[in-house]
Length: 235
Image 1 (cartoon, helix red, strand yellow):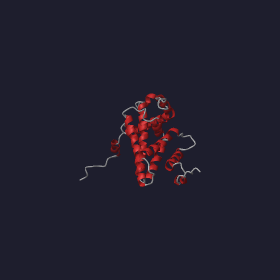
Image 2: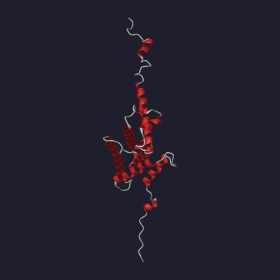
Image 3: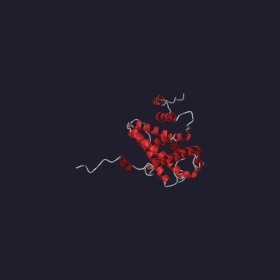
Image 4: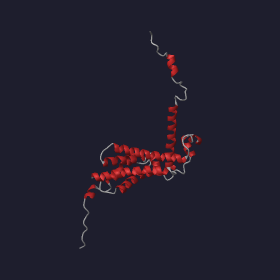
């Protein structure tokens, strides 16, 4: 008695496959294209906010830079406030993700602190990180402003913990972790304000020199180690 099932014919196999012109067959691809275009809108906007300032940049300006019409932008974003919110949020997420990856890589407190400083310095020379510094969250309406400031606080706390850990290990000089974290973040943040991609230093050179100065200080090693000179008594 023969088998009740038979091999599917080539025609039957083709019939089971979705048609090439099916709109559902390319839904994932369309979603990816839309996300790529939305990211292009945000990236371009961040660059223009950095160049001109938030208030001096209009949606018309962003559309012109992208060679699209202003109505086209509304397919990807609601308004200019949402663009700024997403730009600042991306800069913060990049920083937090980079800091977490640096800490997860292990090493002592100094190694982790240096790695986190490297991440921070790198990101503030990129469009989203620079937008975070140059425009900031002051222009973002509530409740998003509170969310962004909470994320900033997470960055601050990460630096404080590493400084405190370094002091405990004996690899860092005794200091106030809060004030030291403020100094580190403040110095590295300022790179995002004065750095110019076409300047005499590359982003990597800027990061290297700033981190070295923060880690080593400005006094010569011999001068730091030498005891203070005794004042001469008046004759």
